[in-house]
Amino acid sequence: NKNTMKEAVTEFVNDTIHFVNALQSYHWQTKSYAEHEAFGEYYTKINSLNDQLVETWNGREDTRIKFSAEYKPNVLNYADKNDCITKIKDYRKKIYHLASCVHEGHFDIHAILEDFLVETNNLLYHLSLD
Image 1: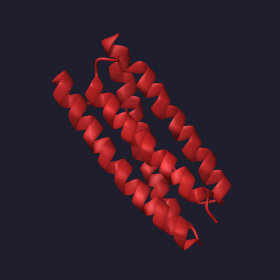
Image 2 (image 1 turned 90 degrees about the vertical axis):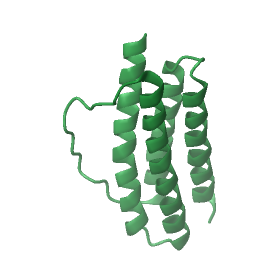
Image 3 (image 1 turned 60 degrees about the vertical axis):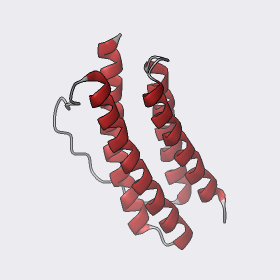
């Protein structure tokens, strides 16, 4: 269903915007230089991929993504590395969910989602290093 797919893309884009804000907070608040670098690199790439996803979707569907209401959650604070890893793994589930909602013929969208997964798994690997 095209509307369900559009809703899934819109929800994912919205979630990604807020997730990127949390990552930037983690980037600023961590006391580990390695985490600081990993978060900084990741949120830059994810923000760019989110932009690519929206522009590709808009071009493919000849539409514009619109959000239903303004949603301003509190920015998340860095608690510890394990809390961050849990939140990143929760976000990764959202990538898989969106991939399951997008039709197989949308190769361009799936390619972007693969890049989201690559970057997310790379971050999880970097955070596993001491």
